[in-house]
Image (cartoon, rainbow, N blue to C red; front, side, top):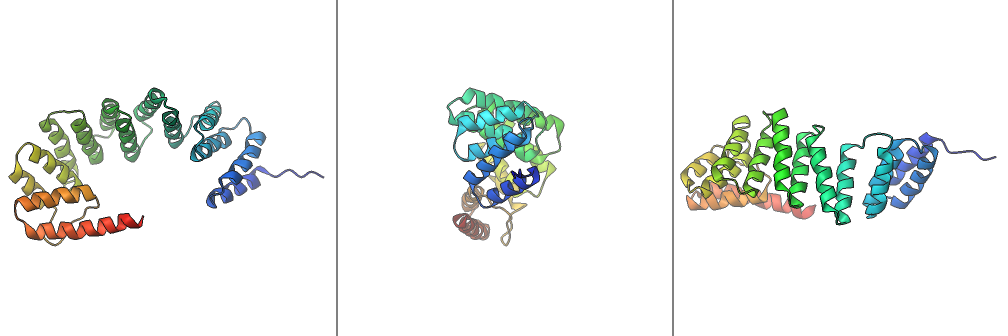
Amino acid sequence: MNIQTSSSDLYDQLETCITQDDLDGALAVLEDLCRKHSDQAAPWEIRGLLEATAGRPNSAIHYFKRARQYAPLEVWSVRTMALQYVALNQVSIAIETLHSLGMSGQLETSGIRMLSTDLINLGAPELSAEIINNAINQRPDDPLLWHELSAVQSILGKPASVCLQSAEKAIMLSPTTTEFRVTAASILIRMDHLQTAYDLVCHVVTPNRIELDCACCLWRLICLFDTFEDLPRMAVCYERLTLVEAAHSQN
């Protein structure tokens, strides 16, 4: 007597395989799920994600397209599919896919920033600026978006004063975020406004305390405090930098 495995059991097996990093086992289970539910998006979409993980971009794109016949793909799947086109040297399709996703209004701030980085890495910073500006139009009080815009404006070669305006907007919305002030200070240094840069970061960096996990930003602060011979603030930045680099080396 042939007893077929139920869909719930198959999904349980799939979860177990994924938890155990058993990629081959997961794909074998998905073969059954796709056969059993050929008109449902979920098994095809998961199969696309796993094929991408396995480093098979052609197969991943095939299964994503199959899933898309039955339902819209999840945001992460769309991005993953775009990156598969990059792996196949079809960069223009990847850029178009990422840009469309960024303009769709479906993403949270973290997703917009991630796509912004993707587009910059693919040589399309102007499209990165477009999706950030579109998100800012929807969420004008989000400081992270203004900070991201400042960085992209710098990459695009916009005047320092323009980049500074965006960074200052981020600071206005979140005055205690150290990273925003470091960005603005870096721009001010480019404009030869050293004293203003120093005063700006002294509001959030004391001789005893700094809240910052970006090694690059910490080095910038160290250089700035060195210029003003502010040894206590240099010391606290060095101490923090040591902790950040130690944590990074363990990951």
